[in-house]
Amino acid sequence: QVQLVESGGGLVQAGGSLRLACAASGRTFSRNGMGWFRQAPGLEREFVATTDWTGLNTYYAASVKGRFTISRDNTKNTMYLQMNMLKPEDTAIYYCAVRLRGGLGLSGYDYSDWGQGTQVTVSS
Image (cartoon, rainbow, N blue to C red; front, side, top):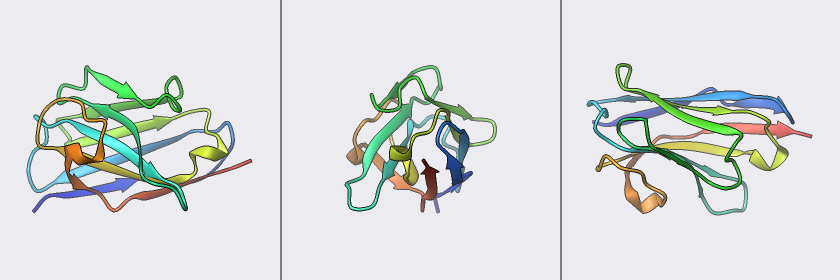
């Protein structure tokens, strides 16, 4: 059974940094595209970042581009999201997800499996 477990969330002041991790188990995901999404209270889930199976091709939402970096270590079956210069509007539950295909995915419908999420709270 596929399992994705996020970690690294927490409370941080504006301007600070956090590094999220998504550990995958159940099978290898080294040939699958992966991504991060987030959902703030009262809002719909939104795309944050995605990486293809190689980790060499990435894409970011405009709101996080230049501040967040997505990466992956296929030897550890783990994906990361380095978040710098955090803003209060980045406060949300962050979810990782995996695709059946190897490329980038900007829509939640592109993904087959999801983690339970990790809370990120940025205070002003």
